[in-house]
Length: 167
Image (cartoon, rainbow, N blue to C red; front, top):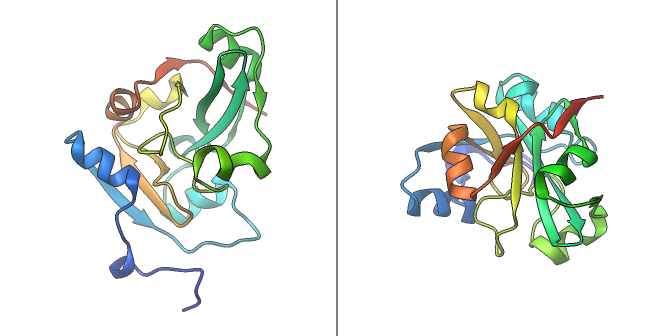
């Protein structure tokens, strides 16, 4: 087994998992083998055995009020206009991937709204509430958290709004 992949027995708790523990939120950790050439949320969904509609990706944006996170299903694109409206902003722009680590301490494929070194205002697409469990990054590549969407909303203080669009 290469350095890129971890076995379940090697899975360590992340800050996101510890934050859920502190909040007494039930969850399960689901490791998967990382393919550096394909970090798409669709691929992650296939690897953790969930439909793309149930696996959510976290995207960092910037507006006049500062940084914020939009959480949408793997098959969706972030509708920046709807996201800005949900945030009460005139306009939001995506933060370039090269800036992710400096701003969040996380890299592409490992960005999460749970347990970061800084809490960002978060909006999750309303489609998440249609599931008993959703999957979000655990804060590192190769590890997903399965959690109830209402618990995710509570622990992240997220707003729920229609911010995703199928593209």
